[in-house]
Every structure is written in C-alpha cells, then in structure tokens.
Length: 410
Image (tube, rainbow, N blue to C red; front, side, top):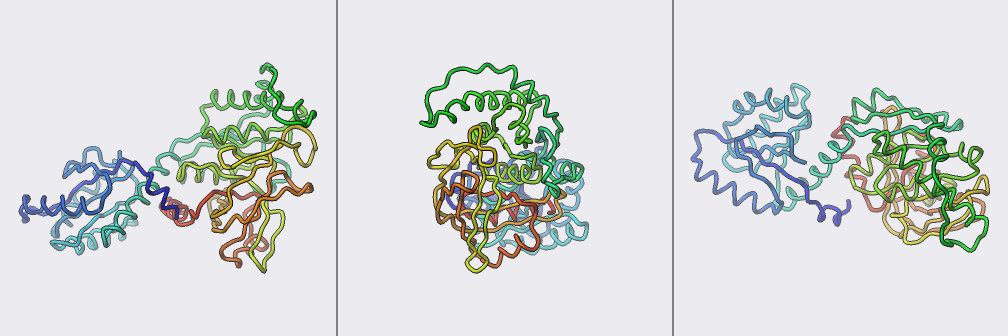
C-alpha cells in the first residue's frame, strides 16, 4: 500500500454516534473526545443527528456504548434511504460497545447488508479509516461517470466486450457509444498551426501538428458529450487522417481524463477504477514477453500518460511507422498490474517492480520490464488472461484495489 498516498488524504469524514440512554452523557462525551483525538484523523462529529448521513466521503457510526442495538434497528430503514454503502461501525470497546457492534453487524449480515467493525489500536483504526475514505470517495466518483466508446472496439479485440447493464448497476458508469465519424468531423474543423521543433526527426516533426489536431478534436468530443474518459478505435486514424492518437492520449490522461486505446472497454474501465481510487493515470499496455521462471515481463505500447514518466522521446507509431508515438521512461520501483473484465465477473491484480525501461526497435515504443513479486502469477497470463491489455500504475496498490472492488461486490 502507498503510505505516502494515505498521508495526503484530506477527505471529509463524518462521525455519527449511538449511545444508550442509560449512560451518563457527560462521561461518555469525555471518553468520545479522548478516543477520537487518539486516532489522529480529521473528522466532523455529527452526534445523533443522522439527517445528512451518507453525504461525506466516509460516514462512520461510532457505537459508544452497549444497549444500542435496538436504537440501530429503528434507525436502519432511514439510513438505508440515505445511503446504499456498507455500514462502518467504529468502537473503542469501552462500555460494552464492541459487544453491541457485533450484535449489530450480525443483524446486518442476516439481511445481506454489508458492514464492518473498526476496532483495535489507534494506529490501526487511523489507517483503516484512511483506506475506507479512499474507497468510499472512489465509489462516489464512479457513480454517474460517463465514458465514451469512440468507434467500436478494434476488430482483434474479440474478447474485450463489456456488459453495459452490469457496468451501470455495479459501478454506476454509463457507457456512451460515439460514432468514429463524430471525431473525424471534429478533426476536420481544427486548424493546423505551426509548432516549435520538438524533435530532430523531420517526418515526426511534420506529423506533430496533425497529432495536436486529434488532441483538440478529442477534447471537443469529451466536452460535448460530458465525458470523464473514453476509449478510441485509434487505428482507424492511420487511414482516415494518416496520423495517430498516441500524443493526444498521453496529454489527455495527464490532464485527468481516462483516455484508452483501440476501443478496449474493459481496459478503460480498469483505468477509471485506478483514476477514481488513486487519482493516478494508468498505462495501458500489452505483455510482449514473459519469463515464468523469474516472473519478469515486458509490457509495451506506443503511448503512455505524460504524468507517469520522468522523460520521453517522440517516435513513429510502431506498427505503421507513421504519425507520432511516445517512448516514455517511467521511474523504476514499485508498480501494480491490474485488469477488470468487461462483465465484472473477475479481475487480476499483482504487485511487482519496474526494474528497467528499454527501447528495442521491434516493439511498441514505451517498454517496461517488470518483475512480478510472485512469479507464479505469470501463470494467469498464459492460462486464464483477461484479454491482452493490462493497466500499470506506480506503487503497491493491491490492497486498495481489492478493497474497492470488494466493497462493490466484485
């Protein structure tokens, strides 16, 4: 897990209380203040006023005493109308609060309502609250998102369909079909200005203005359709406008959009999960070689988000030899590999180390050599892969991804 990421969290955490009428409020309030301050997270204490329950990034129910089970049962119908997320029961363990929390959670489980007791040392509670606030904020970001499919998935992506109904019901994401002609029309309206020299290669420099027209056109399509991201049937651009979308996707991802290649919808969804949870871009790439004995793999593609690299070079697109491709150099160190299936029935996530960048001429331009922490996970790629593209992100993020997907019932 990325501890530096947790330290940067500034989410709104609301704490609601459950207290038995048999306990002295003054004494309980003193214990409450001491307990919450010991955790060391910023919170908004709501007390027993649940009128805005579910509106914060994370809503906690602090079970302060025993004898609160019946009170929670009476509150439950109202709380369920305000939020469909799991119930998080915070408890110090004092005044029989842990026992009450267990009875409440058992009641929820009997009704197939998800929940969790948050209890332990202050340091554990603080970290768990921070993780849950990231997960809950990500769920809110996913709800109502619109992602475009510009053109259909590329013809070779024969296993990369998506179940639009499941995506809407589970993730809250609307998938919007946008004809390729819409983008081509937008490209045709863009003016092609002069661009300062970005490379010494004359053919690549000549292609840059056209690549930037594609970028401006994609921004227009995104704005018109109110999209948070898209995946593009980019190979059609090779014949239609004699250029590539590689530079446009590198720029748009760095600007905070999800911008995927080849009309690959499951990979776009995977990138959206990463963006919503971590606020990070993801690198869409396909494995080019695997060493099962060492766990070393090469992932490659002709574009990478500009905010993921320490530096980059411009080249042509690998397969066609035209347009503008990106050879990016990502910082070596911890990484996570992730893929969610289009029907949301399964996912793959593995941690590893980026051991080096390479620039072989016979591969897509950006090439990352990654050594998986568990070399046995290479078996997944050769026996039961979820398509060919996977998403690479910096840091060890497995626990956060698994936590988010688990909270969504995946």
